[in-house]
Length: 300
Image 1 (cartoon, rainbow, N blue to C red):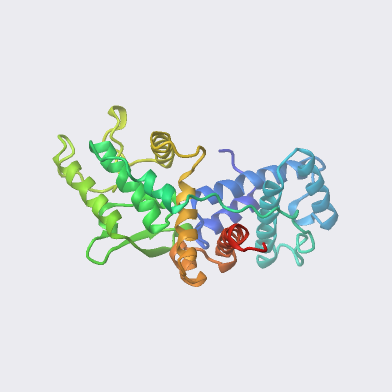
Image 2: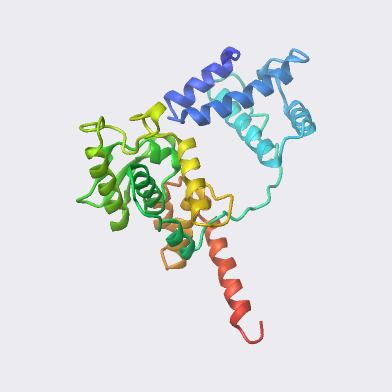
């Protein structure tokens, strides 16, 4: 990917070196900064000379390109962070983004499965090695609430069957321990045992979940492959369409809250930096309570 002007490259290095941002997050920052620097290039405005009016002009420019509100909000968040860095480095005395408001976003309730749907999804038989792997990875996603990127990064050494936890490397390269239920631990153990008996895979250590297709046999499973596996299993069990791996994470959080878990504990389990991110799941629980109330209360 083409290099950006030096101030932007220095900022991206800061995100990697000092903030430990993931490669995916840094890529999004790079894309947003490239868009902004292209805008500045039109009248040769140096980034340190951009003022509040210039920022409002850029917002109008970006909105005119048809970006969704959520994308616009992300681009503005990138610029706020970029100019905070500029101020700290002494390149500017005031952040021109400080008075620019992001577009108001609609609060979307996360998509999740009912407990009955999860039971149906995980009911397929582990009749061969691939099915044993699929059962193990889906049980792990639902049991721990980890992100799919965290799931595919797991190594066998990250599973502690005695302590019933897995070690997860989350956003910002922050480690956390996720409790793991007995069903998930059993499914992982059965997959590992089946894998150890497979010709050509005996003694293979490292990634917890492997690709078993002929063209990539023995390599680490990718996030895209996990999505394909979930889609296949959803279709097999005749569940509703458009369920992503993240829906299992949403289901994990929603079911915990529905059964009485406190919000702070769920925040820790999900690896959220802010409890406000976790709080959206209370809206899901409230919606469920409203539905129950409307169906059962005699004067609802």
